[in-house]
Amino acid sequence: MSKIAKTLSQLTPFPVASQDKSNVRMPVNSHENNPCNKYKDSVGVAVHNINECSKKKHNYRFLQQYGAACSDSQELYNAFLSQNCGSPWCDYAAMNYNSWQQMYKDGCRKGRL
Image (cartoon, rainbow, N blue to C red; front, top):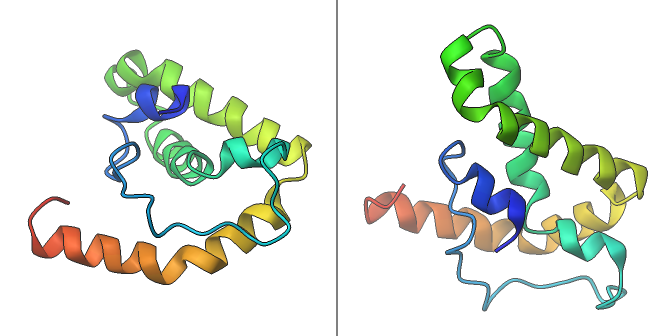
């Protein structure tokens, strides 16, 4: 599990580390040493958290509890952008969107989300 997933597990409502990755696919041109691969599981969570942090930036208690997670999310997202990982991540997401959607539907039906 990535550092960002551990840090943000309470902040985000999405399962991060417990996802079944058996049906997750990577684009054909993806390589193990591609620097963008490290963001595939965490950038979506980071974006979600940045949005939540932005909404609650005037809530002292929230920032006291989650300020470090907000900062970590922003740092991860900035690195993602600076390494030009948007296009590879979109390819990855496009290949997996339907299975992710089904996973969340199943989770809702089973009361896990």
